[in-house]
Image (cartoon, rainbow, N blue to C red; front, side):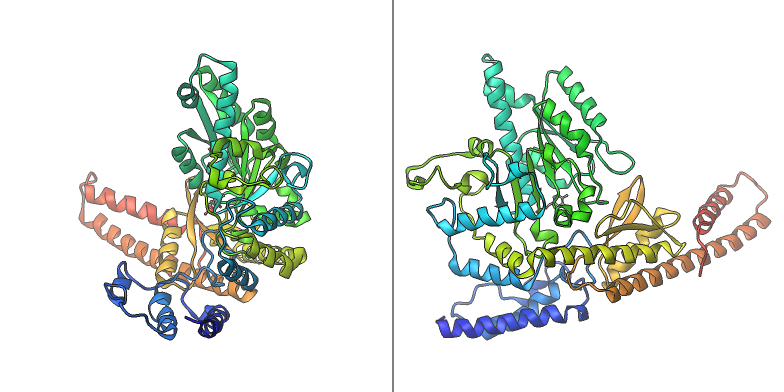
Length: 522
Ligand SMILES: *Cc1c(COP(=O)(O)O)cnc(C)c1O
């Protein structure tokens, strides 16, 4: 392919993406394909002779799009948002165009230096404590990871190395393996699955501690767990606190956990993958006090900050710990500026790294801090609007506080109704929501995700939800009326009061009545 063709291909592709984005509302948010669908549509072997770009681009619409879940659709309300914006897409293209592998400063100075600068911009925008920034006097700094999962694992490994070195000094008779087997990590039962996975991958016991009635990890719970482990001869090493849990967007009590971690020499990592972006807005910062106690802090611009995957920001107060855990020197990696600029390969799991700061830079410059704040505020306001609609309808109840872009609600009464609602919505593919559980209850999570989501999209979702709910309640009542009739029939024909069939029917009636009672049918 020559440059002329590249430009034609590129232009057509950009137009395709713009058209896809602008008309995404017209597509069902969920696809209608079965596993293996693509196998039916594509040849078994790669083409021997090259094809035209027109053929390839045409097939994106023909075979790929039918199997796409449209994460950028304003009807997508599942999980958390997957960041996206035109400036980020262009930043991604430039990154691909340069195609450098920035493992050290020398391997592409701009790649390292732009990352240092954008991470400082970002840290200041979130009002992070000075110590985390690269521009402070100390050894702190930020780095872009591929995902929050990697950030959690990298910090676990650093915490493990830090604790091992300290214990070796204190107990010269203990060996490396003995020490590492004693180290314990803690998180709450509400933390993301990637936290538990970090424990597995990093070979450290990860205790999932019970959260309180607001789904928060409390200091007293952590203290008790640490004391118990210490009594058993184990050593608390690493705590992962979540700001904005995946289930209900709860905030662990950093103000309580932080001092405990600091006093006990335990590494406190804060996972704010989704909620972290909200720190850009001064009026939302009160939700997340106590970040100053953390040793490391991470959040995902690729979630709620308009940057496409992958771009996860991680800051540490002391980068030396990361380097000590991962530094492997080789002659071909050495260069003359090792002391002045970070060699980011020591701050991450892989050696190679992409020029990810470009898309972050593009987004921050083209939106500006104000543009990013406005986008967050708009999402929060839309979530509040949805919450208001739910609260005005007494068939539903709100569970957990709505603080950012997530609303947790359910149909009053038995869990089976909210479950059926979720099944129906998924089968109809008009909107996409997923469940969580909250104190034994099945809950529907509604998240404002797309940057193109508007009031009319929230109303569209609410209409879909209420229409389906009305049908569920209607069929419940019909079933219970049939049961009532059957029961009367049974009572008149059966005289044996110990009859199993009668007891079953009475039980069914009871369940149906319970299900029916809390709602009024409009
Ligand atoms: C989404 C999420 C993660 C995982 O993020 P990745 O970048 O996909 O690894 C971790 N923690 C929380 C709280 C999340 O919401």
